[in-house]
Image (cartoon, rainbow, N blue to C red):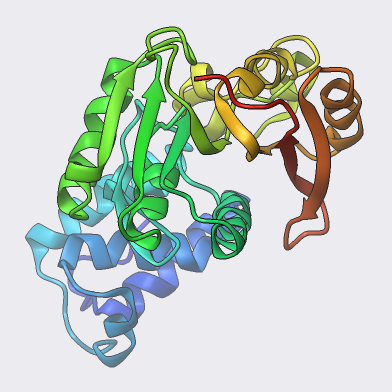
Amino acid sequence: MEESPGREDVWTIGRLLGWTTSYFQQKGFESPRLDAECLLSHVLDCPRISLYTLFAEEVNEHDRGRFRELVRRRAERCPTAYLTGVKEFFSLSFVVNEHVLIPRPATEYLVIEALAFAAKRPVSRFLDLGTGSGVLAITLARELGEARGWAVDLSSEALAVARGNAERLEVAERVTFVESDLLAALDPNDRFDLIVSNPPYVSDAEWERLEEGVRRFEPELALKGGPDGLRVIERIMTCAPSWLHASGRLMLEVGAGQDQAVVRLATSIDGLSHVATVKDHEGHSRVIVLECTRASVT
């Protein structure tokens, strides 16, 4: 911290939160109060909402020291989720570290679309390409009952995180984790009812404009998608029809403003047709839903 009250002052939870919120505001953080609450609740090992009933409680010197260190690292733009080691997604708590992309709320729209599809047509086998921390595969496994999932990532470190999350959230027996460059290591005879992916889609130009904390701390492998951001997306769409059952779905998260280019690419690929484009809570086109029009070959 750049400054602090005198040692004789009593550091209560309320005072710590107030000081840290002000400090983070000076640093230009988007959600200074939330960041302060997440860090302090992590140090005190209590639910964030509980802080509001404990405002007058004094924080001991040991915990203040731990909190001060987290505040210092957050001021250096390290993401809060990496400091606490957890991030909520679809009302589930996932372990995260610097080897995996931090889950974003916009990705929940992919889950919502997948569940809507599964409500109309049984999904017994699904595939998550670029699983990262495993949020998509694990959430779908929990929501889809007996369905089996396959979760693929090129990073062995990311897969270790995802496997741990699957164990904690009790779906490890129904999700198979595969280290692979997209579909390269999968059985060529496999077919799926649903393929989902939050692929790297940040263009080279957009990368330079990203928040400093994202560029410095989150894995480039999970973010950068080539000059136009579409390199991995195009690879997925090109191979997807060969891995989907007839009328199966491919659902992709895309970057803001990429939807029209992705749909144009998709309609040029034999075996895919555009079903829907879904907007996120900020009004950006975020999920592209494609249907496999090619008859299954097993």
